[in-house]
Amino acid sequence: MKNSLVILFLCFTTLVFSQQKDKKELEREARENIREGNELYNQFKFKEAEIAYKKGLSKNPNYPIASYNLGNSIYQQDRNKEAVSQFELVEKTFKEKISKAEAYHNMGNAFMKEKQYEKAVEALKNSMRNNSKDDETRYNLALAQELLKKQQQENKDNKENQDNKDNKDDKNKDQKDKEGGDKEKKDDENKEKDKGKDKEDDKGDKKKDKNDQQKEDKKKDQKPRPNQLTPEQIKQLLDAMNNEENKTQKKLNAKKAKGKKIKQEKDW
Image (tube, rainbow, N blue to C red; front, side, top):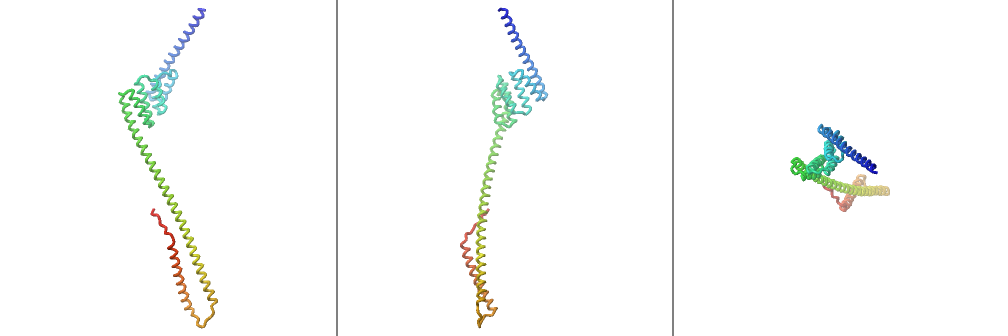
């Protein structure tokens, strides 16, 4: 029984020692990966540096410096949204205020590159809260605030211009609709006027034809007289009758004209 306990204890001790050795080995390899990543980063080989940092973190996830450096390598590749997510993760793992300030500082810079100035201002303020003596962060904060102010003014101006354009378009549409309605109304009235004129012309023609026919019939029915007028006298008489008839027709047309509505033209 005692021998069994001794063997069991030795096996457990060996297992623990082996695990500790493996853990230390992984930590050592992780440090090597981080150092490799730093060398590549300093050579501006940011993609290769990113790969090295990820290798190190796969062996030791609880490595805040590796997470921070990974965020920097992603930021240098202009993948700003990914960089922000990485810096947010880093900020939660860092314990020291200086390290937190650096994470917020780089987060603010990533937001600025995306022109998200409001978020940039908030991130840089958080950086100042953790390290109020950082002049670079103070300068970036002032710049972000100025850019935010300019962006808000541009958005306001664009909105006002769009509103004015929409109002102008609405007015132009209403004006065109009104002009179209007036034109249609005018065309209808002109059509009615033309119809009335055609009717009057038809009446005049019919009346003239009737009078001519009556004259022809009268001439046919007329019997010879001893004192019959000469052809020249007959022509003068007919001309006088036609003149009187034209005068009468003009008077009738004048009376009809007075009864019509006067259409006023628009001055646009």
